[in-house]
Length: 126
Image (cartoon, rainbow, N blue to C red; front, side, top):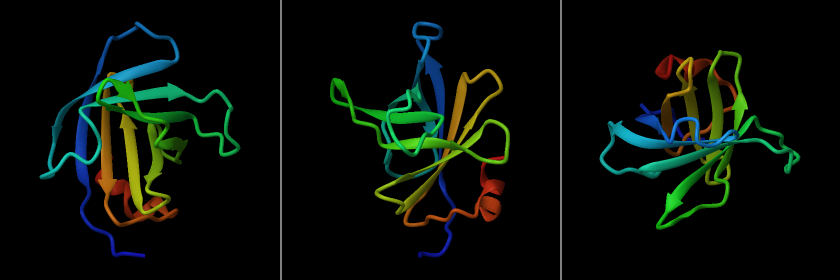
């Protein structure tokens, strides 16, 4: 496992508010890295119990004119409105924080770092 680094933080705002009941679309407002490793547009959909892992939500990114397949599930943490996920088969850790009304989404992307013990990384997103 690689050592913990400071994450790249992304801020997204909801677009098409209220248009869909089980899906929310988010547009990138800002990020503090040099290269956007996610996408300018995100699709967060409710879990429909299609996988054994049973996350609360699924993340897709926009690739050209289409949405990707599900990149990761969003799993509850002990903190309210904060979820965890991973990229590249548990190579990168993602922390997701939704605002109280879910119109703003903050993502912390820890490249080349993954842990199941979130006590050392939750400080970056609270």
